[in-house]
Length: 391
Image 1 (cartoon, rainbow, N blue to C red):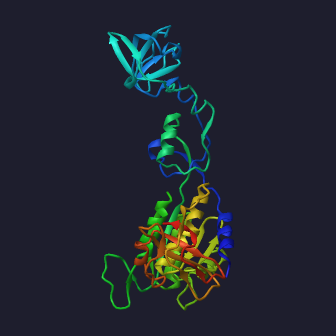
Image 2 (cartoon, helix red, strand yellow):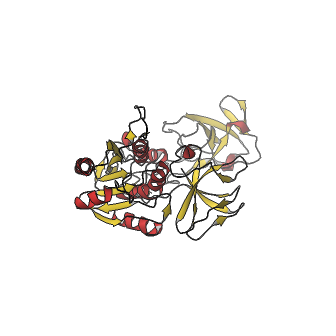
């Protein structure tokens, strides 16, 4: 069995960028940036008031000030502030020449028309200087950034209306097994519904990749082979669930080899998920994941997800929080890395959810994350601070 760290390195080292394209900013969310983005302007592009109030000279704060102009956001000041003068100004307005501070309207009185007096003890400047946030030419977003809503705002602010992004991997999802029926069907004796394909397709889509569910391949060489050939022709990545262990009908590894796929590993030291397969050819990447749904979910999260992001030039860092265990985690066999589904409690700890094994998919619906127990470790005691991989 290959240690998980080596399996992950093997997978990531195999990933190559699939290409780049420009997209409209309106459709750039969740895409991976494929260029450094520079600002085309100073930000702010002018000295900007951060308060509603009056722009004036600090040297005149003790005097009555004559108001010479009113400045709203988007208006270019016409007057220069001289001694004992001020301009009424709104938040976001351009600070007029000659002014070096803004006094908040809450701290002035108006003794006569167009006259104000500062009645506070002291004041900050309340001016955001031109270029204070960003200078023209500064890099504001770097290659490999996953574009979330806050990044879309940055793109818009620097005029990047069509950012260059990585092409999205096309990912085929295939379930195997004569026992599987689709969700709309009522399972007969010895049958079960195909949940893996829909789960995997949803996980694929969450990365920004393009998922196609090819349905169920029966446990025959001909059926699996024909479905694989079609999927490999139409996609960059093919993910099988089931058919990868050592049973009489676990046909996937052999079929992949027959189709020219170089299998880089067939077992990894992880529980759940030991019979996991990864292979490559010049045209397609292939994963074979176990058929039990918890195994499929976990292996996608810890192995396939980072790989799909790497195909788009993004180094994925999983969401991780450090939290104390609310109860001890124990196991008997320690030869594999073990992942436990856990829930966050109201007291700020994490504890294991009810979990009957890798077929117990309902356990994940009540889980907030996964906790790992390394090879050779049999127990993590209550109160230990552990990294929780959020899901």
